[in-house]
Amino acid sequence: MANPKSDTKSVIERFRVALEAAKPASGGVPLQDLLAEAIPLLQLLSELPAEKRAAATFESFEFRECFTVLTLVGRRLALLDLTPTTAVQVTRLALWSVDPSNEPGVERFAEHAVAAAVEGFVLGREERVSEVAMERAASCLEPLRIDGSIFALIISGAHEPAVLSDCVDALGRAMLEADVELAIVDLTQLAEPNRERAAAVFAADEIAKMLGGQCVFTGVDQRWRAAATDARIPLEAMQIAPSLNDALKAARNSADLDAAARTPRWRALLGRLLG
Image 1: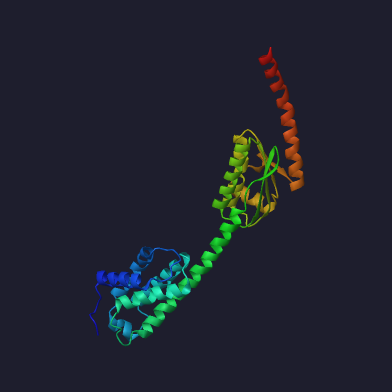
Image 2 (image 1 turned 120 degrees about the vertical axis):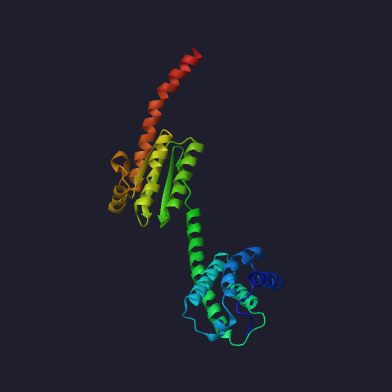
């Protein structure tokens, strides 16, 4: 058998050279990034003597730790949007870097190692697909201008609190840029109410008030009321309508009243300027 332990620096250098020579399809991901992802695995593999790998007794802590890291590396490669073929190729290059002489008896270990990396890749791919779907859904959550005086934010699906906060911030920016003071936030189709999501969406009320206007909420059912109570949000101080149509009527009535209240002030000011 070979030396009990491979020199870690030599293993990493062999992997780097092999990676540059193989040039796996990385989809634009720099090879240096693949090297960085593989270094923890290479360090662990270099500490496993060939005798142990050939013994094929994989129940010890050393092997469990090694296979766990292989799974994590596979997941990371999936999150980098690599293909399964490339992930397997990178894993096999790592195994070769530890055992370039292809010692007999270690093939079974290599099979288990590749299987662990593929398992991690599958988990990472599922995570990545879910992440992309959420990003696409969130990109559609733009404030909708109803007319000259009202913006609406109509949210559908299940979104993380951070995404909802971004949507509410976008609503505030849109109102500020358009000099609009009225907003409607519809929660009818927004799923999975909880304290954090409630804090995110009901922040629209504070933003509207900071701009000198108001926000009308709709779709606030018992689930959202419970979530708001959990977040200590005073819904009684907010304007809530039973439906989107009622919210539009309330907002338009408020816009008409506001316009009527402001007209005399502007006329009086104009009269003073002209006088």
